[in-house]
Image (tube, rainbow over all chains, first blue to last red; front, side):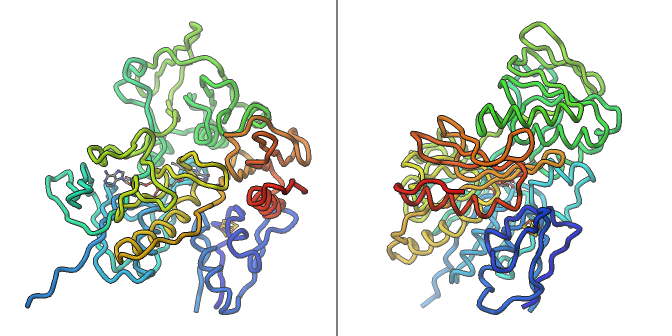
Length: 62
Length: 407
Ligand SMILES: Cc1cc2nc3c(=O)[nH]c(=O)nc-3n(C[C@H](O)[C@H](O)[C@H](O)COP(=O)(O)OP(=O)(O)OC[C@H]3O[C@@H](n4cnc5c(N)ncnc54)[C@H](O)[C@@H]3O)c2cc1C
Ligand code: SF4
């Protein structure tokens, strides 16, 4: 499964980090960093992260 | 033999809570009908940007609309459709157009509406803006021109965010409020004063601790008279004086509707099987803190309550037992004002004292909120990278009475 974050929308709220800490993180400047893809076993967490994003910046492919 | 009619769940309110509970019901195996009644004319959208980026740039429904799970399309969405009454015993909902809808299961997802000053104070007969819907945001955005004098009544989260956004657009902003510091009730004096200092550096004027006596005038020429005899004039008026839960339609069912609708920990209305509430309108007890039911007007609450309420409703309708595990979501909230990111976890508003856990209020800080010497909330001013760890620590402390906070 591929994970896309629209960085033009993302406000670095970090809500996705709480939902899927293995996939999303904030760097030292507080900016979002994330993995480009994740294992099938992480799907529930990544879906929860996409739902938790207040600006709907996360899309999942595959 | 005729086939029995399909069983039906009616969801009243089609915003974040209504959408997520619909998805959870259909993903959770409900094979009957789901009818969503929404009194808004269009698809659900996210509200937090309405006082932040969308207010600055002008809102666009296509960008703000929620991405929906495929299941949501199996529901029947009735936009522009308002419920005016419900009969929990007869299992019917009455609509504003006079029609009734029978149901097997009911979800109350009607959230809150923006409050306005009472008519004896507001002599403008409802002029001036509030910020709750995309239409509200669009109308206010159109008036926030550089140089405009903007009077914001109310210094809660939304008032403060509107003040920051308007200042960023070049407006001259005055914030008027009866409280002595911004966000006093949810966050307390120390954090409120620290946030106020940032607003003042950006050019916002405050008139705090003085109630509004009257509001008069029209667009382009408002006068806000304060009870100390002074008057604040402005071109644009914004009322950010809190919210009122939309629960009137549930009257007449013996429910406790003093502030939203009181539910049990399974989110059942009162203890009625087959009827649940989600989101801003639900007042539920959270054993993480105590047994006092509270409404939590935070964005993550509709998501968490939707999952719980859907599970309860599906179990009730199947005649099965509801999940015996207690429902203990950790409230979380953020706010953006200028370059300051505020993040709140737990229920800081119930604390009796605060303690700086890290950093410095003039710069970046983690503030602990304690009740009877136990941590019940934590607020970060800045320090976004610390949020996940602080949240985890707070959760650990709340879940284990013997634990103490260690940063
Ligand atoms: C300007 C603004 C900024 C915010 N910023 C933040 C933030 O930074 N962080 C954060 O955590 N939270 C924030 N929030 C709060 C967050 O948006 C809410 O918690 C969330 O919208 C609650 O969702 P809900 O579905 O419970 O209620 P609502 O979004 O209020 O939805 C209820 C829906 O029900 C409809 N309805 C009401 N009565 C009826 C009826 N009788 N019949 C049919 N339909 C009805 C309403 O029209 C509405 O569409 C903000 C809210 C606003 C307004
Ligand atoms: S939740 Fe959304 S806005 Fe926040 S950091 Fe993640 S992607 Fe960005």
